Length: 421
Ligand SMILES: Cc1ncc(COP(=O)(O)O)c(C=O)c1O
Image (tube, rainbow, N blue to C red; front, side, top):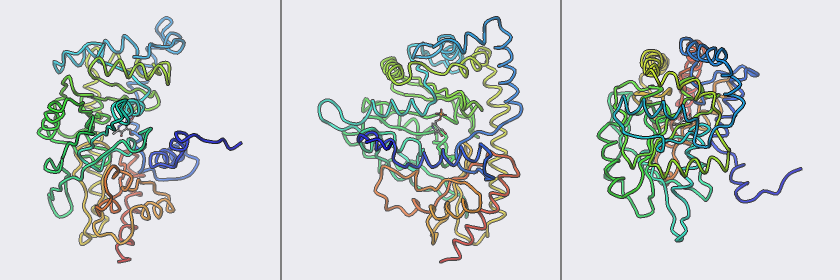
């Protein structure tokens, strides 16, 4: 039976970038088709990190009643009290944050936290005004784009570009173009940024924070890849917290995406509102991830796992992938790669490309290589910037064999595309 869909139903069922990405990811990772998966945001399986989670699982299993208690009980909608206590103590001890359990809300993945938060902080207000989320630097995470229940919630700004060498560039926030109209009710950035691997400088974050504070609106900082864990950033930054910040963390890129655990640290009113929304939509959260990670927060082992095992792994992968791709691409082509300061992606900009990035995606998929077309990351803006159709995002976290072969084919298709000028 084909159901009659409400307006909201139509919106949620529409074909979106994130759906295409997760479909590609699911097919590739299930192994039913032989695909080189350089799309999606699946973390790598790092043997030493996997061993940590296996050991944690064995501890849960061997504790008297431990396993039954984790699987057999619903937690509160806010999250697992022992986990929240361990997290709060960890953040206060290491970074002097001075937060309490009332500042924390756990959700089923940080993706769902953003869904609730964006729709709570923007959209239609009871006085008839419309609020929007400012993305001060586009391209920004594809997964936010379709989360607004009432129309598009985002207004994004073009970046300024710094050219570092012939084939390397970096995005910066263009503060001169950052007009904050009345309708802006929150600011949001991912740091490191998905898709580019950019890490906003401390000065950029301080400036955004000051702007948000002055306007009395929240600054949302999405740390899915960032500090203090999983630490997939290749420079040292101090995690900061202020009362008007909404900080998100996730267990996914620690290698635990299957546990669907997101963490929000915010003012108590916001954390409470989020837990209420979570109760309505989900009752409670999956608790296995919380149970696995809590002991590593209690003794700070999470920092060791992040800094000694995870960061160097991805840093090496990023450098290697970049070198392979550059070796395959003709030096005379006008391509540019974003500096890789974190996350698990290369952001390839094919300047003055004769075909679109969507067409490049299609050609690559036909050859068994999955990437993400860059146009999905430019939303909430007019659409006249040429970069929109000239970039692809390449995930470099899979095995060396897969990444190298995928990059070889990408270089071939890029050369073919340029050849059509
Ligand atoms: C920037 C960013 N934020 C949030 C998420 C959501 O992650 P999860 O729901 O697994 O916590 C992702 C996933 O890839 C991401 O890349």
